[in-house]
Image (cartoon, rainbow, N blue to C red; front, top):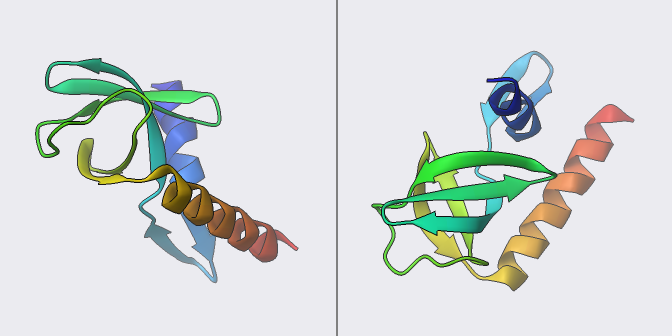
Length: 93
């Protein structure tokens, strides 16, 4: 449960008292039939893969409510993660 709490803190950004959940690209590191494990910053989370076809280890996925909802190519994932990192730095300065 502590890992999930850390994970959620990474994807919820608070600004001016408003919280919003952001879709963050997560790297798929394990696949087991309809389930997989994603990782971000050392935090791992089990997800359901039934909504995406052909997901394989090394792919990036967008996860919502525990379900992978789309695949994302690595270049786009890296660009998105960079933008989110810059935004997070800007709200803490």
